[in-house]
Length: 169
Ligand code: OFO
Image (cartoon, rainbow, N blue to C red; front, top):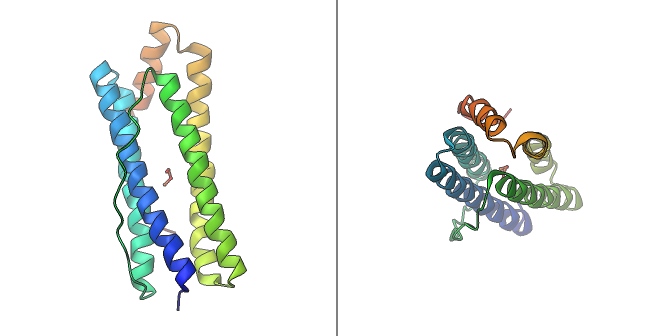
């Protein structure tokens, strides 16, 4: 049986994952408007992965016979100016999500809920990848992003990202 504290923190995390999807969709719309379709594609694919992250927690709670409480999703930040500034926001956001996942791991440990600890381990690994992918894009933007030709090439690279349903493993 999942404790009240774990139930609450998992419900909050579902909300954070769906907020992440909203945030990436807002970014995708911004890039689309700028004509940066590769950036728009990358952020839209990420939005779909965030929905998968939320659904994986949803399914875990159902499997553990724990009540799911869907909370209101905040309006995402839309103060976007240019690709570098947007990806810096992405990194800040993903660091915030990493700290929430860390809190779930810590609470699971404190409460000796080893099943949830084992479950959340997948998210800990996922966050390492998300922060790394974002940092790589920021590095490229800082090195080359000011030149139009380079921005075009980065945009082409981001266009290649394809959505694959994120499966829990
Ligand atoms: Fe769900 O990892 Fe990003 O936010």
